[in-house]
Length: 423
View 1 (spheres, rainbow, N blue to C red):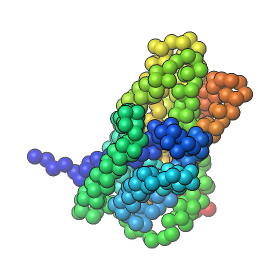
View 2 (tube, one colour):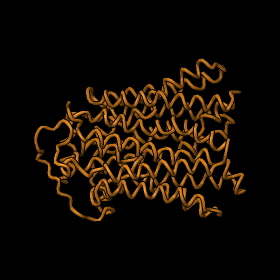
View 3 (cartoon, helix red, strand yellow):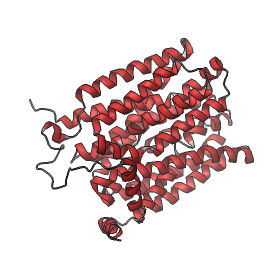
View 4 (cartoon, rainbow, N blue to C red):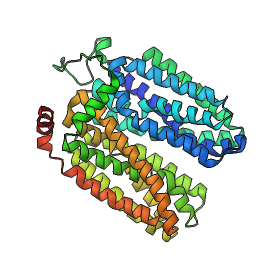
């Protein structure tokens, strides 16, 4: 019987780690009302704590990438999962709003940062020579998988029992995951005497890591990256990616549907449907990114997403449940399908050694776009008493993003970065 390459074991560990981290961060929406009822806090106060978490996990990516190089992959995963465990445990003890900010804003925000930003490209780059795109697709899709499988269960537990029972379930799952990481996670293929999956002989690329200050490494890498036009094009497109996904759909979709007479349960069901097709679409995107020009994949992803966002106001104004399902399926296939090609292009431009840190900065632009859409759509609603312009504008921005990625010249990728670094 052919032995399974250990890189696939690492993939499984990373997959379930990301699921656990994703459900912890995304479960915040389930706990807003219970915290409001039990503690008497205003919803804006609770939401602000969760917003801090979103911001921190977004901007922590490049620093997490450099810490992996300094401390090692296994230590960082243990540290991050332990941080999440501490945050979950302290939730049982909190009684003041500042404690909510500390626990769910800072501790859980930082704890989830590694898993939800740079872990996927790091695993794909360091453990796989072949099937990198597929691996990226699987790991990226795992975020949606956690929400799809566990959020409805957590909501049921909260409604039937209490939020403390739901927190208890998350605590148990996190502890099990920590044990798995402790027992089976490895830092690199070299540590266990194997080569990355698909590599036939030792690479000439140096694996020696200088133990520099991770903050210095993160900012120095950014200083190098900003000299390269490709970085700005990728960061700009990913800013629009965040603006047109989690910042807009994730924050305002349910409210938008309710405004046209759809029930909240119906709108929430459409989000779950998006999650199902996001799992399919992102995994397929990873497979495609191994076989086709990643620039053209991104061009079509952003163009089609833009078309779907422009279509949504029409679907809602018609009051058609069928059209809403069509939108949810079509949009869901494209939700985070942009990640594998973006990571691949980043690796082509900056090389395997720097690309994970650079992607961390690109992802920070994604989260900035999410914040702009979350706040901007609310302002547009206050002005026009409707979200329609917000969704139409997001669709038009997606068309701009499609132009950003297609002007990256494939044949000049390496030349561009080399000329920049020489200056």
